[in-house]
Image (tube, rainbow, N blue to C red):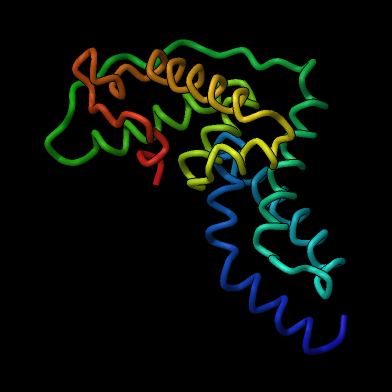
Length: 180
């Protein structure tokens, strides 16, 4: 990489790292250390191909998703055991209710399967169309639709506050907006 390419790469990293880090954090279930490692791996791969990339951000995001899916596959045999559920708490007037809801949603996202979490992050946090999600994850559009549907249903079960049918917020088809 020559000096000009290195300057452009550094500018890209400085400009896009916060957004890429948010995506990596959601993909890792809120584990910021794992997200930093994931992002660093993706940026290192991009640096090696920097001069040949037409769309650097798209490439880095694709590496993020594929790297995380590979990690999930490796760790599939190691299952986490969840502990007791958080008690129901009433909404507070001081604004902490929104923070508590974000925590609940992040914990619920961490309890989804790796594939379901990836689908929700891509569809709703990254706002990718179904076709693009299918291409990124190497599956069909129908699989994206059915997995996303099941993931949303599971998320509403884990965090009833999101389900309008039981008097919740009714965030509907975009529960990850709570995390922002």
